[in-house]
Image 1 (cartoon, helix red, strand yellow):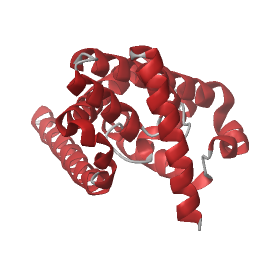
Image 2: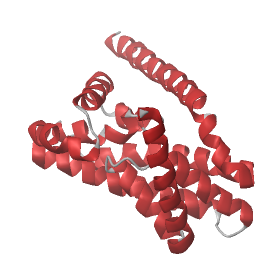
Image 3: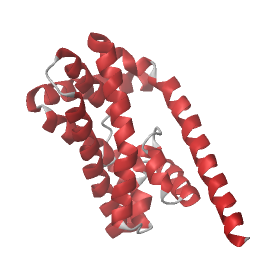
Length: 212
């Protein structure tokens, strides 16, 4: 029952996304990606692949889609960062429920940010759930704003490229992408964790050299 309700809601949201992008063009891509990064339940897995499909039809330019998607991601992330920066954790816990943000979601993002620091902003852009909410604990922790923007943009860019390319590659079958994304999410998680492990290893190795 709950799963059917969620699927019905997603169908409605998807139709709004498709109609919005079809009408507003690149602005629609940026707008919807900003909503997703501002912690609203708007799936980028529909936004960017559909825009990729429009690349396949020749209506959109691949790199313009990527740029608008990345900048939209940054804009929404800045809004979420500001909510955490100025409102603090109590504000988020009080009002997060209105954007379907549970305490559990926030705790996951908190742990990820505390464990990996600044780099968590980069890697989280490739991860399910965490990518949507990581900006909040970054704001609460008062991470330097320029650093936040840099890592957010650097992480959002490959994510936008991947989903746009997938939509363009699938063409008129772009909507089928959502059936493969669960497995893809786990692959991305594994790659991101491997990258983090490599980064930590190199930091420890360089620290050892400096001490010698």
